[in-house]
Image (cartoon, rainbow, N blue to C red; front, side, top):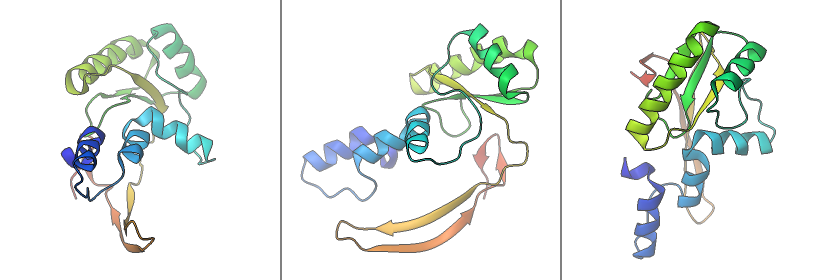
Length: 156
């Protein structure tokens, strides 16, 4: 989506047009999952156990998987819409699922960076909707329950 594309937002700003959405800098910071995790960690936000950065070595992935325990998710850093996500339930699946996640990530996003997180079997996905402007005005709109998903994509 162009609304989530930092490069597009920069070009709009450079053209002197007001872009309605987050700043390109915010999109850079939060659009990539590894960057978002680093920002959250820097601000002491509790996170699910997983790798600190991209992981490409299968042996390193297996070592980390044993530390955090199964099941786990291998996730594309640049991912979205459930692409590049692989559920791994046991050690023997790590290599195959990692290769598949990397391949999907490269194909879908042009970026094969993946990371590992402990799998949450019954997660809740709650979004807080906020509208703000460049004048300091900020309005809380509502929260949105997005837990009903199919293939890691919101249904409702």
